[in-house]
Amino acid sequence: MDERLEGRPEPAWRGLWQEKEKKLVSQVLARVPAEDRAALGGLLLVRIGSIQEQRQPAGSRGPELGTEEGMPAAPPETWHTIAQFGHRIALRDFGVTVVRELRISDAALNQAEGAAMLTVAHEIGHAVEKLPYTDRQFALYTVFRRRRAAHDAYNAALLEEQPAWALYERMWQERNGIHERLKAACAVQEEAVNQFNAARRVYSEAIDVFNAAGAAQQKALEAGVDAAGKAQAERLAAYEETRRKTDSVSLQLKKFDTAKYDPADRTLREKRAKTAECDAATRDLEAPLKEARDALAAVYSEDELRTHRLRHFVTLVGSEGIRADLTAYAAKEWPGKPQELFAEAYAFFLMDPGKLKAHSAALHAYFAGGHHRNDSP
Image 1: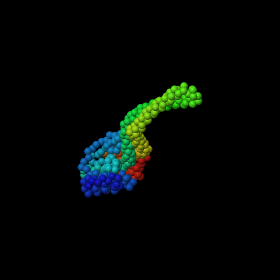
Image 2: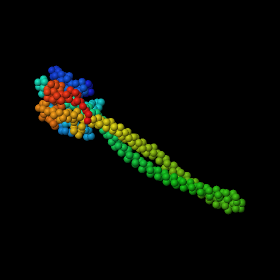
Image 3: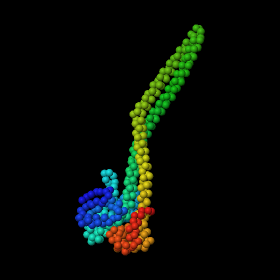
Image 4: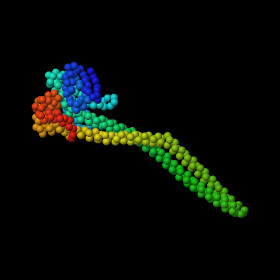
């Protein structure tokens, strides 16, 4: 049976389970208090032959959540040789999800029934202790991935801008050259207009003088009038030539704008708009990312690499003088791995509360009163 039921409210069975094994595990799960059952949500109960022991150094970022630089360091883990609780990120068609797994081996289930139940309950204790960390770390990881994707898109947009900028600058330089020629042509045309206007005034004045003169004087003035008229015609022709040149350069500029400059300008504007959109998307995720980090910090101390649940537990053990030798395993791992005493104590709280109370009434009251769910900093 292979069910992938992450996110479903009840645990799912995966692997080749015998009915008696499923019954044994189910009996343990049935003892989990309602207030702790959230730790079982979407849990995969994985039946395997054996587990190879691996130790994750304190402060590492893998192999579970937050392998990317920038994510908070994970608490230290020991993956036991007979059973293991862990959580990991899984990629799905709809995105990423967190998978909680309780892996149980032959060695765990081949023990006497009571010992096998305590082994399963021990791993559930880890799930309960880590629950707020797991959920909030995954929430942070989800936002972290979204922001990283948005930032990657922003960087990609910046890269796409570069050739658009280079093309635009080349077109601007070429357009500027044409524009400078147009300015020069306009200046020449303006000078031609001024010279034509001056020649026209001279010719007009010559005509006025000629008309005002008597018949005897007009004969002498004819040559001057003709010269002024000729000069005016020459200046008009010169002006028309400069105007044609100006119109030619102006048309060249318009064609250049339509064919090259405007498309380059439009492409650059589109690329810059895309970059701005990606930048805004990245900035929009800064607040959610901070909220997710703060939410994780509210239940987890990255400095101590412990959940606040475990910190309070360690404080209790110290303040009440509780011995760590509830089991030989707990004593061996104390004080370097206090989560093992937590898990052992939780296992006895579920399966043999009398023994837990005999070992420490304060420790029994701690779990019975729900103080193990205290997530305050």
